[in-house]
Length: 159
Image 1 (cartoon, rainbow, N blue to C red):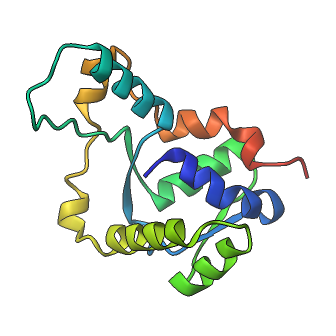
Image 2: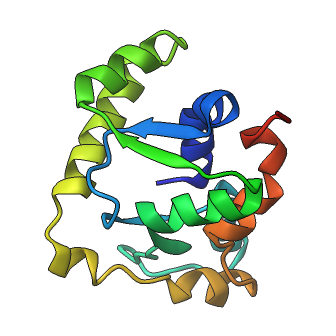
């Protein structure tokens, strides 16, 4: 999942009520995330780098965080207590439809949320930051904390 998806889906609630509403399950659910910037750098490195054997796969995980980690990061960055509300899938879908998000995106993200929140803990515990990002680009992947700090103004309006 992209950091940017999180911003697009939470910035309104965070700015208006210091809360975000997603069907992500319990706060200990782990999420493998990446910034679009890192994906772009990897794509560029692959396109302009040496030819890779057919079927080569480069895992792309820039950070692994729990919902609780995200809450704590947002609270620290904003200086205000942030809340997470686990909402039913249909409630979430109905809300994002109001913002003009396409049905295809709603379906895709809904299936992604269901997969991630239902993944057994022993599998979630295997998520790790991909070494391929730094080995291909020479740059460590951006962390969720770095991204949230950079994007603070997009998430929070002055109160």
